[in-house]
Length: 225
Image 1: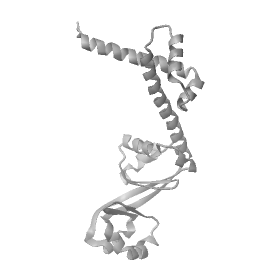
Image 2 (image 1 turned 90 degrees about the horizontal axis):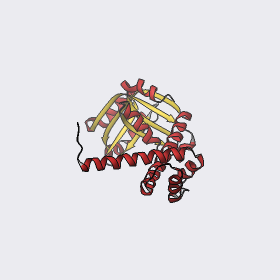
Image 3 (image 1 turned 30 degrees about the vertical axis):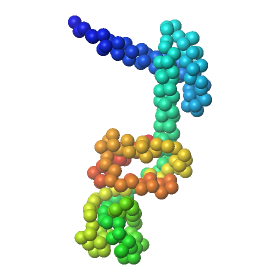
Image 4 (image 1 turned 45 degrees about the vertical axis):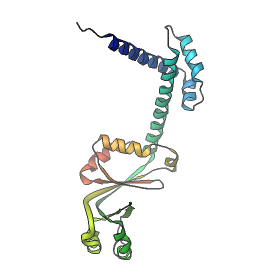
């Protein structure tokens, strides 16, 4: 027989009641779509709603516990609605893939010293050419066939090279500008499936992700909305 001490029993009872109140509050709100909509739009008086739930309930409820449950429920409803909008954006998006790419990391000042050479030899000819400027470094992304030219221009001043990469281009509708959480959703989705994103670029409605070739099959699967 397990004997619970008074402190543990008290905490357990409190936790049980809070969870119970949360269930009661959620059941009530989901049975009243108009109330759910008002919660989502911040157009609700929590005190009045809590009293209405208490009045309809067959058991004694704590007013304060209901208030806490309703505020938590509002955050949950907002997140649910935004997740739906995010998924809808992803369903409307088109996916392009470019393979056999390389990402070269170098000190930023080196790039500006050799900008004319880069533009002449690579930028004006390569199918893919992206430059990501950081505080101290620059990452140059282009087709693998131009790696010898990059090596020739920047030499031993290159910090790091990533070969055999794939660029995922997500072309979304203009609505993406007004829907928060898109990048959070993509990063979480990729992370949950063990896909490492090496670089991320964004240009208006285009989101560009650089991954390793070995993760390509996983990406096709997770982006199949």
